[in-house]
Length: 518
Image (cartoon, rainbow, N blue to C red; front, top):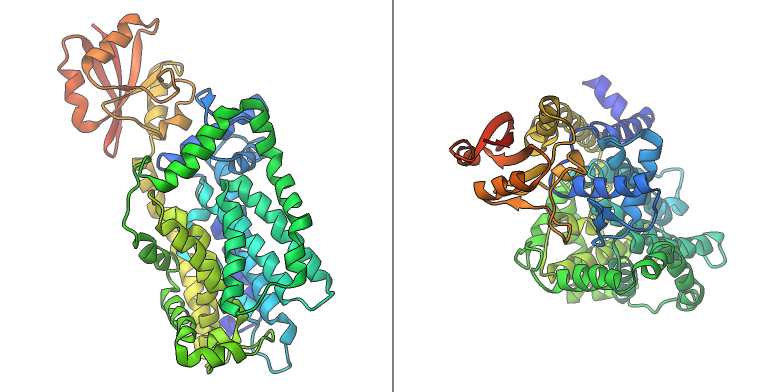
């Protein structure tokens, strides 16, 4: 026990933890693509890669204008380096997840790094990074070939750039680079997920100034003159060629349908109550939930009227606000900033007509910063407390590795059709067309690419009864058809007087069969 405690409180701990964290973020990225989104996005990138096209996203050869190109660019680049695989599809997401952790470290340096003394305890920035790297929400979404972490990192980088600017002294080079990073990553965020990448950073900065009861600096007020052109130039690297190539079709599908209609309606069938993200966000901070709630309460107390004098008169010097007493809001500009940063996405997405858990991910880094501040303050109490915080982070990463190694492959096998398609290709020619029978498998977009039956608008064709299957086989040059179906629907094909049905493989709720005309 003494050996473990000695290691946790030694200088070797931080390097060891960093190595383990990087390992965890890249470990097990080779499991089959999960759900409907990962395979679709991975396939869109593969089609762009096959055409050597950096502009037009397609799915099954048809235009796919739901999302911007940044994730596809990352996947396309990975395909060129590593080949087409699940690992390549997720590699960019893992990089962006680690980039978000680095942002937490930089924020800690900006807030407290300039006030080190000989008696200062271990650096707060290390605890901010430790908490961020080991939080369940960030790890999970950094392992997915989806857009949530692709938006979260540039938002985090933009906010980090602004905070560096805000905390640097007058005339320091950090102010220039910080503000330049702010606008540059706004452009990257727009490439990641559209207009929300532009709205969030400015709303967060505005709310931060309201909470601090101060006006923006002259440098900040004048910065849009050169910063907005920088952000627009970055974003225009994709939006301009897309508009020039596709015109109104792009504007209508991307902006009208997938921005405004998605936000204002339930067109895409993801309804949830208004308070949905108010309980999802805290769960994203596990195992640091108690620390997050404690720091959130500490922060909110500063808004009580009797605290207003403390709030307005609090120190504005970096390095304060982490002692055991006093108001966190008054004494820690980073806590104020994290609260403002967290609040904007939380409120914005709570009003959305369509809600999915990943939408709230841009609010997770500031929530983890609050948790990190509380964890650091807790660790100052004794070496035992410090060791317990570090042990919690280590145990979390080890548990995640165990889950990835032993539980995730079993779940992925049931969720994905990869094994079903592979089994079928060993029985019939790999060019045999594939369709869903009484269901649609979006997971098959990647694993049965180029073979799925589609309607004229590009959407997958679902064969709803035996007669539709027979009609296709009767008019097709192909003598057989692979169908993906639920196991409870197998009897419809087996009992048909029109067809023969051979079940090739089963996995979870689904099966794959080859059907032929009698």
